[in-house]
Amino acid sequence: MYNRSFSLVSAQNSLLLLIDIQERLVPSVYCGDMLVFNVQRLITAANTLGTPVIVSEQYPEKLGATVPGIGQILLTGTKIFTKKAFSVCAVPEFVTHIENEPASKIIICGVELHVCVLQSAFDLILLGKEVVIVTDACACRFRNDYEMALRRLESAGATLSTTETIMFEWCETANNTAFRTISKLAKERLS
Image (cartoon, rainbow, N blue to C red; front, top):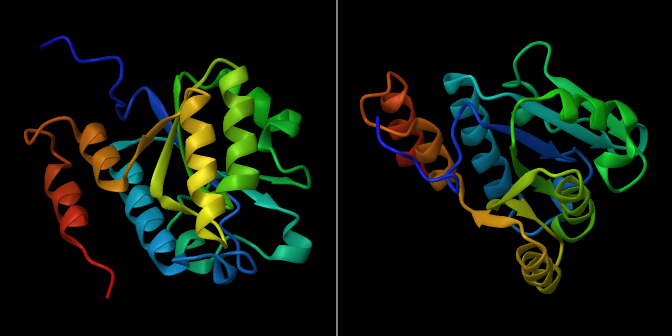
């Protein structure tokens, strides 16, 4: 075994956090179909490799549940935290859950990048977690908000990455029994 960089994520040192990918939010964001496609691939990879997945929903009574294409592939028992505050860290049960998780790295995707994702990420950094933003699995209504949010997140210490990069870091080697699944996910294209 070689000494692997601490900058890399692994299936064991991370969890996947899906923020507010909901029925009434996704249709209003730029490239919502690509967001859902990439989040589906991340969930499938996480489920295959045993990486925990948790979900937040912003005021679901008004904004709906997590979109069906994502909700249907979540494992039974996946924790879903509902909120009205923009940061999921305002939910005490979420903070307790995160503090009890062995994962040091929180892989984040969701809606909207410049509001709920950004505020949650900043608060998770304050809690001592390493935050990784999956740039092709986050979205906003407007491109300028997306670009400014990425700049702010990176300057605050968040790492920027992509769906495919995360999947292959989780997999680590072609000798992994999950490699065929990860490789197949990487080859998929949005139709």
